Amino acid sequence: MSERWWPVSLSHGDITLRPLRHSDSRRWRDVRRRNVEWLSPWEATLPTEAQLSGDEIPTFGMMVRRLKREAREGRTLPWAIVYQGDLVGQLTVGGIAWGSLRSAYIGYWIDSAVAGRGITPTAVAMACDHCFDVLKLHRIEINIRPENAASLRVVEKLDAAYEGERRAYLHIDGDWRDHVSYVLMAGDFPEGVLRHYLSRNA
Image (cartoon, helix red, strand yellow):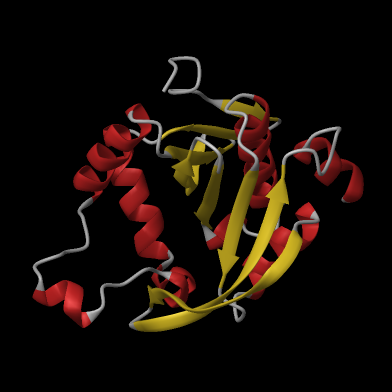
């Protein structure tokens, strides 16, 4: 991946996306600990067959090392979401595919203490603009459990297109869970995803 693509930080007002760092460990753990009940219904888990094969949920340090390696290889953009100087969540552009596909997906989580302030849709919009304008990706998916009302509000605010259902798509909270898929495409909003979101939600 070109050095101009990563590492990179993006900002709008009080909201910043910056590379996730090893030094974030304490703050990241504190936020996650306070939000166990808020986040656990949407958290990835390991199916029995993965556990039997020796897979394990990575520690924070293991996760950061893996994400940094994947970022250098052009497969992932692992950002911390920072609001007014504090880490309040995480946004990852993953599964980046080049060639004739040029696509990716976005996953995110946010501290419940600052949910509902437009932080997540702003962060997602900034990430999409970077992917479309700089990486020249064509398509970005956001896959959400249909019960996740807060996350569904994010894609609604972004005016993302509903594309359909994905049965048993990810192992979440102890079982294989259905998801609904939303898509943003390069060129959907000529003014940019962030500007479209801001004008639509002014």
